[in-house]
Amino acid sequence: MSTLNDRFKQGKDARKTCPRSSQATLGNIERDPLPLIKASSSGRIRSLVELRYGRMLVSPFTFYRGNALLQAHDLAGTPNMGLVSPICGDCHLMNFGGFATPERNLLFSVNDFDETHPGPWEWDLKRLVASCMVAARDLRHGQSVEETLCHEVVGAYLETMLECAEQSALETWYESITYNDMLAKARKSALEHVQYAIEKAGRRTHAELLPKISERHAEGHLVIRDDLPEIFHLHNNTTLLDPDDDWLRLSDWRPLYDAFMRDYRGTLQADRRDLLSRFHVHDMAFKVVGVGSVGTRCLVALLTDDQESPLFLQFKEARRSVLASYVKTRSRVRHEGQRVVDGQRHMQSASDLFLGWTTGPSGRHFYVRQLRDMKVSAELETFDGETFTAYGRVCGRALARAHAKSSGQAALISGYIGKSEALADALYQYAQGYTKQNERDFERFQQACRRGSLRARSEADFAADYLP
Image (cartoon, rainbow, N blue to C red; front, top):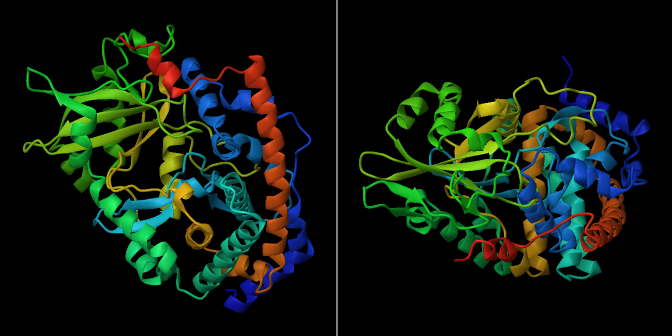
């Protein structure tokens, strides 16, 4: 059995074949971004692809967030130290945030796993550091903040990975970042932001959401309100499904819900299945979410218990990971919903009470979780430079903990990184280069939308089509 020092040395030895300075390489950027953007839209609801493009058009940062496939293609041409383990796959700044554990504790971690897949840990770290640079430039923070932010993210990743390397396997598995921990360590400039996040998370409950998106019909049952293009019923005249969509052949939402529930219940622990059985469904509607996910299928079901306390379940389509075409290691599971759930459980110290997976009509794969339950994300546009840097550090910490837990190889990664600024310098250089590449790709995307070869529409434009 190898010792801790042996694993540190193995990581250090990996620098011989993959020098840390080589991590500045941008990869496969000699390509046209438009075919890759179009490829990432394949299989989505056609009318909602236009909304996806509309959201990507808002800024270089929303463009970056909206197309993980593009960077996955590029990263495939970059060197790595050879360690493959479950990674996030879409590790940008806005895919971190707060969420409630089953015990109602508020934790901070990576919180989006749609693209999770076995891959090099460097890919997650590069996407995170580049997103810091793209966002900081988009928000006009200036070069000094950009440089400090990128170095601090990598520094926090390095420090935390070293801490994990010296912990036992169980300590690494259970360790988490709580908001109380963040509050205790926050500097004065960030203190109010952390306090506000805690208060906001406490308000983001099912009971608080109920009156915002539903109403009671005369017959006594609850119905989710249509709010185009964000929320719509599948079989009403406000549907945004394509006219030839196979789901429109269903009589209403109930056959779809019943199909989801048949497989889903079996993916839950017995006690959670019993808890779920105490709820009764009222309604289900389509809910558009995010930027990169727009056009994929996402539905929300409204259930209540005997006291009419609500539960919102989200059924989110799980498509093939954007990493799958670019790594040699295949996912160990064939069900894409299970891939997402397994990745989340590998990388988070605690996960949603109702996290599971299912198969819908026509064989599409989905994963299931609660909607909104104490979930909170950063409002980057309200951060000054110091607060932004503090947020970047906690993201770096959270990613290191997630990688240490999923790989079990913290010492190997820590040995490779070392204690110098070598990797931080290389990744800052990578972030500078990739931010410029993202700006060039964004400009190509803008031109394509202006020419009409890609069609983009705003939320207001969609809503106007359905105004009385």
